[in-house]
Length: 191
Image (cartoon, rainbow, N blue to C red; front, side, top):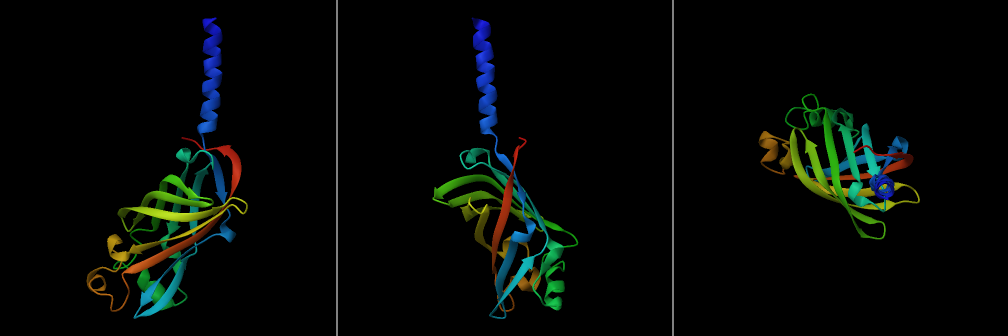
């Protein structure tokens, strides 16, 4: 009898562990983007990170097991103006040679409403890590998430020296917006 309960307990535990795992998703790069915008000399400008990767573990009914990590290639930043792009990558700005990647890690996700979520985690750029909250919309029909986050570039030492003292040339606030499309693989995420 004790043997029966032990086997039943093991089967139940194995089933629970399977349910507790989130599913791996694969980024669909050609349908995804990460863009940024701000103001330069009072006029709006836009740019895009052309190269990034994602590690996504998500299960709609088990948000506690979800995690998302985006790794952005800082050298891939482009605004369409070569001179500005070179300045952006310089040591006073993003220092893409010294810090070739930025990482956004969502460690906790909560549902705010239908298709509406909030990710809590960390954004690390130029060796500085800050806690961030990211509201986003998730369309599970299209497997697409989209949202935006506004940061103060000074919090990440972007635009150091005289560039960090005033907004005369470049505004302090930078908006980062994204659309990420991914497809479920059917495989459970490793914990």
